Amino acid sequence: MLKIPLPRQALPCEGGQVDQDWEDRVAALWDRFDGYAETQEDEARFRADVDALVAELPEGSPLGPFERACAWDSTGHSDQAVPLYQEALATGLADVSPYKARRTKIQLASSLRNIGRAEEGVALLTPELLAPSDELDDPVRACLALCLSSLGRDREALALALGALAPHLPRYQRSMANYARLLVEPGMHPGA
Image (tube, rainbow, N blue to C red; front, top):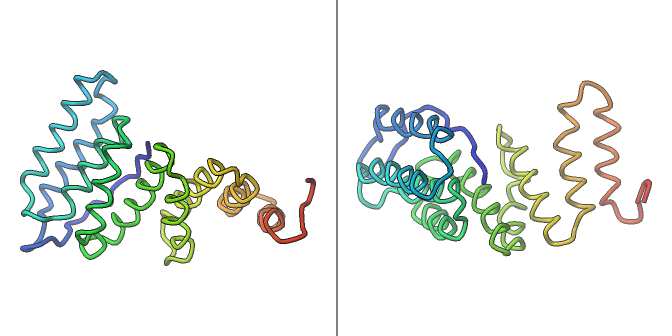
């Protein structure tokens, strides 16, 4: 289960803007998520609280299935989250919020991996490696690495993880980036 913070901004939606108050209430609910006990009753209550906020959205808003998918996913039900993430993308989430659409792809790939469909996660996230850079680059690589590892492609997974880590190191950035590249470069297997 991935939990990526939301940017605080009003988002365009069918019929106008989702107001800042709604966004603030969604963010506040997610801020309280860890306060819900990990019981079926509290998890159901959390999902009901999300559903109540979603009910305020204009009909057909892709934000609804997105928020509902996040709630199912965060309470351990990847199987319930997958079709909702797919619905959010299919109904135009990228037009409403490119940021949330990218989050959806990351979280959908993670959920697909959790239900034994890692190859679909790889297919979903691989194009994201070429997407314009933002703060979700590392989560894309981390989740893609997990999907690759689930498919037995551990060298590729390690290369992605090292490549994502390298820029954050206080030293050895260049070396680690090179080692990451060499892990997957044909004929080059340092330390294999």
